Length: 347
Image (cartoon, rainbow, N blue to C red; front, side, top):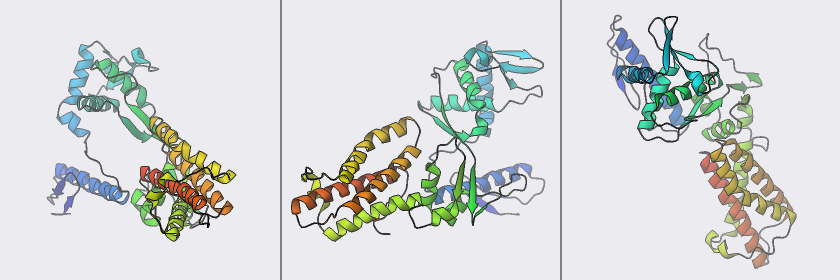
């Protein structure tokens, strides 16, 4: 549209209105799509510190430079009019074409240039989040990085590959078609449900497993809704603490020896698992382990709440039980915060 402007976090562009201005159309399209991405990210409470256009790797000469580096190192060869990388030297199942007969580069070449640039910028730990259809690129990118001889360790970068997410709404699958241009954005899911629900639901699955996002379930206020179940446990404890009316800090020295009920003991065991679980989830790139743990902890609390009164007359016993449930509330709050999910005090 003539003179229409679009602005995103990292760029702004005004269309010229000239139907012959192909470069202007391209720049406008990039800015428009970046703006749409910004809206999605804002709704999801995510902010990227840096945006990187793949095209800049070509215009800056980084792609040509890495190809020349590989050629100089003797890691390439010419065959059938194409330039090949000796990726089998680094564990790939076959050598890969880098430059096709028409002179264009295959898509993994700029990936190699990008990761070399990232390494040079000081990022010693890199985790790529991609779709499962990118599985084949892992070996060739790592082979190119090793062949470049810039000091990058084997196994760099790490990858987490995700399957597609299907969406159910009103008992029916929402039809998604690339050909028809119909799709569901992240912003759609947030608007239909909530940021907390979308975050918790998407993090509740292993990335390589099929997943159906059930919009109706995400809106349900019952125990079948996992995020509601966990948040309700936190709000339930806050209600108990509010009814007590004391300062939670005074509970730090409570004598817990009177906590003998099996439900209380199970709750304490669940709490003790948190540090180790969290460390393992971080090491294994497994945020779903945090959601599983929070659901188990919430279940343990609900069971305990149904087993024993907390606000009893015996001050020592009451203090012990309050200290226990206050600790549960803190861990629920901390675990939800790791996932970027809120911990409401009332529901």
